[in-house]
Image (cartoon, rainbow, N blue to C red; front, side):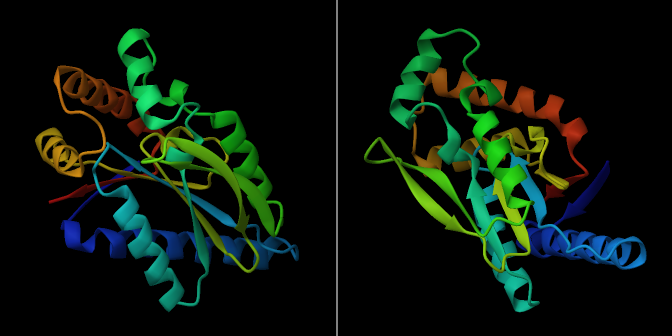
Length: 214
């Protein structure tokens, strides 16, 4: 695992360089040892809630496109078993209901495995935060070289090829979390955030690169 220090404004660029480097490495390997088509590169972008994962993923997608690399983003947030408000209440009354256990990782792993096997489309869930509803949509993979999987616990996934974890100071994440205003910020919210941060510290060992923006 390598730790990379950078400015926050450069985080998207740093992630893009790591992804392009991995693509080139894989292309060399395939050229030298195999004539098979190169499977899609699956990249996990994880980190604390409100650490900038979604923003960074969008920047990476744009930057990759400028270099002729097509990508698609899968949000782990869409794979929670419960809708946000229901999940929040369930957390409060169910001990241990926090972290990867809240997510349908089995379904997500299936989709990631399928994405590397040449499928041109997969049916994925979408959770609407405001409406507290879930529906399925078709994710177009045709012509896509990279699948970006962004979400708090994405480095826990097995069916990914490169794991990047964003690590920012807890007070900074806390401030961003308050500004985001998705969930009620009370004593429970603070406790959940602290526990999430502890879980991520344990998952950090799985990351290929830990990115520390300042």
